[in-house]
Amino acid sequence: MTDVDYGSRLRVGILMPSGNPIAEPEIRAMLPAGISPLVTRLALRGSSKPELLGMLDQLEPASSLLADAGVDVIVFHCTAVSTFAPDLAAGIRQRVEATTNIKCFTTADAVIKALQQLRAKRITLLTPYISAVHEREISFLEAKGFVVETNAYLGINTNTQMARIVPNAIADWADDNINPRTDACFISCTAIRSAPIISRLEQRWGIPVVTSNQSMVWQLMRSNGIDLNLGGFGRLFSIAGTDE
Figure: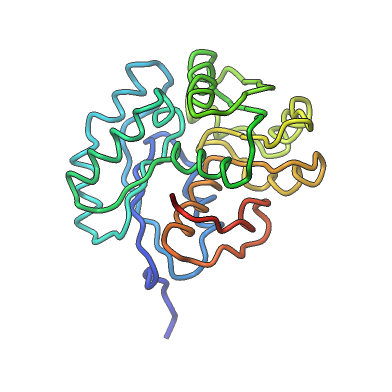
């Protein structure tokens, strides 16, 4: 008989942008056995303000569908939306939890906790976004007490375009822009292939590298008491930390 992993330790419901083909493979690569990711998509293809905020229009119905599957936790997994304004992530959590009575966190929550646990204050921020989204993310991080000392963006509008960038190209771009005098580098966005280059960049530059998918998996595991000893995805996974 062939063994099938049905999620005996944890079932996580993930709400992610409809145009994102990258997050699921990266998340599955990072999750240990016994954790089952169950995904529902919300419409998001571009990066305009109406499109980003429109992703929240179906938040309650989509969350209810994940609740039907008996998930243990729900993650709203979109960096650009959850960092859109300093208090937006809290509103998303409240709406999901009020609808489902299931605990929830967002990508923004995971990123902030990751940087805090790494004791990173001064940040290199790298994003694939257009200027307006990139600038909002700088404002978000600064509102949370971080100093964005170095930053760069690629000016890409859609998840489909972001997903086409190969890891080596992302690494080369990061090499050109990482400031080794900062405390950490945050490579934002759930739709770029950043997971394979985390350890490579850390070894080259000597500072922790945080990505959206990596920080989400880290927060998921630590907040549910699951072993974090996973190799290949950066210094963050060696830090257990505690929720405040």
